[in-house]
Image (tube, rainbow, N blue to C red):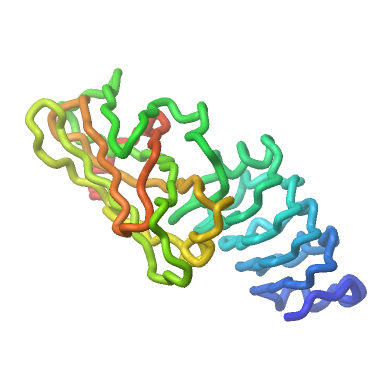
Length: 256
């Protein structure tokens, strides 16, 4: 529905709104009443080029698309009770460090995407290129142990790009036991990247973006693992990669 300040005078409609699209380039701020939309699932603010900050959002939010909000600097809220599916901050070059840190640490089901030139130091393991070795200390490999990883890859646009390439891109991850080269189960194995990034890929300023995602794996017999990331698109390559120290949990006997 169309954004209007008059919505604040009709609070009865708040519980009916599940998706909100704002595209007015004149918008400089979003009213705080947006947090009262208790059923709001998707917020799209593409192209709000004068928007400087975002207020507190409702916990129901799962999709946040702020593509091309070139003046956006601050995220004046927290995501403590929110499990996002997608976070898209393509072309939001003015995000301050606090906002970037918030995006990086927020859990997502699929991905978070934002401008960046290096994998943030928050990631415990970092390497140049598309692979890195990890030695997990304190992991007992004699028992079934599920690990939850958060990965970050720096996507670098190659010089031979052509304008108008609109294909979907995928990022793949493979895990191997570094001692014997045997593959380790990982789910999911691939991640679809937003077409939004691809349609800007011929713009010089969009050479580098950070793509952050989470995945699970099951340690079989070794705590020394090799992680390999790959982009299935010949216009892009991975310049750096990183991993947070994993979260560990032991599955219950009923398999859940």
